[in-house]
Amino acid sequence: MAVETTRWGLVYCPKKKNDKRWERIKQLLDAQGVGYDFVQSENRDSVERIVSMLIQNGYKTIIVMGGDSAMNDAVNCLMKEEKRVRDEIVLGLIPNGVMDDFARFWGLTDMTDDVLIAQLTQRRTRRIDLGCIRYVNKSQERCHRYFLNCINIGMTADIMNLRRQTRRLFGSRTLSFLSSLVVMLFHRQSYKMRLRMNSDVVDRSVMTVCIGNARGYGQTPSANPYNGLLDVSVVHNPKVLKLLHGLWLLVTSRFLNHRDVHPYRTREVIVESAPHALVGIDGRLMKTPVGEYRVQVEQEVVNFLIPS
Image 1 (cartoon, rainbow, N blue to C red):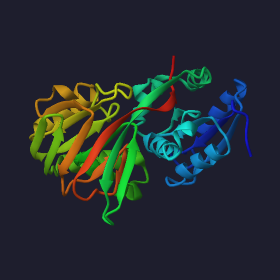
Image 2: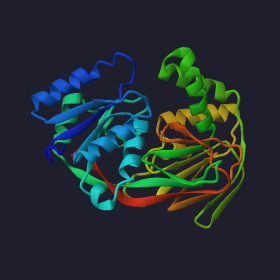
Image 3: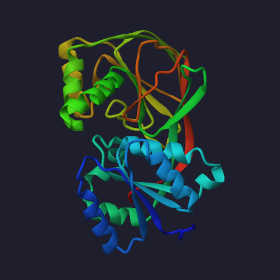
Image 4: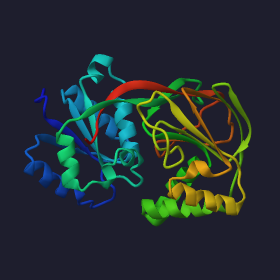
């Protein structure tokens, strides 16, 4: 059934059980006279299905109330559509995740809910870039996955994996993340990698690599999703004290000042070899590619609602 072109399709991804924030957002939407239809995701696998349903029913404005992983699902669903369909659709974001790094890039996390809704209703759009990883899986199938924020290879992806395991124990995303970080700090591991970026070749053991279309959870702080380029931070294996100093620089947005962080800017990263390094994409662990894989940027492919 087709809907009014001005009506929002709103995908709600609760941060935790009994998340009451939606009630406040609903009151603000109603007070500002926004026409919308609301669908709640049941689990992490349902966002793409819901977004696909909204697209098929003619919604031109799709708002995700969730975190980085939910937005990743939304853009990957949208990118399955033909260009003429994508060009008619605008994505928006109400941050409701743990890290909310892509929302933080646009300043959305600094806004009160009433200001945020007012900004979204102004419908100021910008075409933004997406990163894309192209790889072969264990079944020798050619695959690809888009990302808004970043890809992590190595230790940061290990933290994501450990966080997923410890979440069952703690029952809290925040506690599981902090505990995973502490464990990884004292169980540092290096990975033998060979990377090619522009004319540069990195062929050595490194701790972690971040390829950012945006902030990359502070690891690619100068990246932005509309310049047609990817920022890359390659982190060598520092000693514990230097690692702690690096975490302080990360928190204070000065990560690139660390002497063991080597930044690059490129349109493409070719990972020729990283056989034992896990890969995370927009805060979620993905299946490890087999053999060589490439990370590229696709310019101005998604319409996104931005604040004025």
